[in-house]
Image (tube, rainbow, N blue to C red):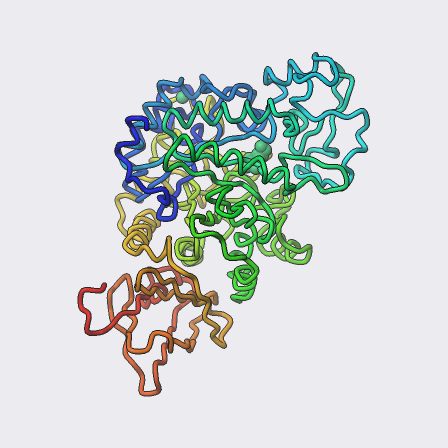
Length: 567
Ligand code: BGC
Ligand code: CA
């Protein structure tokens, strides 16, 4: 075990209790005034991350790259892009995180490389049928695999691109400058294991497996979720388990629940996977004021092995994807969340949390509360904890990747560089201007979203039931209210969320908890029993439905009234 890991708890299931923070290195803090965030800058900000209550940082690709897809086009898997620092800077960041009890998750982008990667340059020139050529997927016609969808619809019209050097077409699921690796070639497997070794032996704690459903291809299929892909993942998992304790693989498998759950295998593939279908339904339920979309998708979600966990998120560095919804629901989402067509991209919406929700603090709090209480581990996108805005005019997904807003100073305190030199302009939209929306201002006001988020995280961390507990939906008649319980080791948490703009009353059947009274988690006040068995009545104004409203009754703990120690 690398020395730096000694600071961490020896627990293979650490990811179940984690609070993950997603950060592009480029966007967080610039230490050397060149206008680009870097590892030294990130390391300097670790105390901020720790103070927020984060226990794991997921950093986006930082490898040498032409940066035509923000680093998801990798040119060298075993180095650091010089604009972010070097391998020593990376190690310093990793050690600094570990010293603070924070784990680090990096990216394993092995569906594809950049067309500038030496493997591809070599492949184009190598003879047909050679091991080198076969690092990638080639064809003489662009007609092969016609059932396969195009993901970057706004940019590409085929999954094949012609290479004049190889005189053949190569396969790419994303941009045409990102050729897909060929998983039929055992040399590719070896190369990927080698990359995993390189970073795990430095002490990284987890890897997000980018675009993992698309690794293998097969005639007559849609080339997603193939058994061959699962076979590779099982091998990768076994390889890592045998060499490195307490590591985690996080799948990025944007699929329907049944297919997504398959990435857990029998607890022998990935430890975690993002719950893509749940994400848009959280937004739908909120706007429809109806718990059905959330309840329905959770009912369709299979149980997963005990050693696995969903990763939940509201927003990330990509567009809010609407791939895993029906055409009708997609139309609805566009209509209510992206009236301005400039906000639409591919099959999704390029906005941040606050801008999607019209800068409505109550709604931000409500969705964040659900993020932290539904079954899974929450992943928070940098800047959303202060309600950062976005810039839909920046092209591609760059509008949600702007510099972190630290203060009202020049460049939002992100960099001392000439403002024209910044890798992206800071947000100056009047409603979200960095002079008002920034860490420093919010640290100075305990009513700020930042403080509220800190309190929410701290509260979640007091109860392991949120990370590890069972999940049971309640079925109140009033569908504007979503209610569920989480139970772990005899600890019961009841979560009640009012999705309506207006006060609601709701009756909940809590007969399973006979003899117990609910105690509100935040204020610790006890609820009274009514004469008719136990009737729980929650009236919660929606717009402050998070956890801070006067009658915040969303997270309740049921306990024996005589047991005074149990809150
Ligand atoms: C990443 C994107 C990236 C794509 C291609 C995705 O799943 O999240 O940001 O563009 O993979 O690598
Ligand atoms: Ca820099």
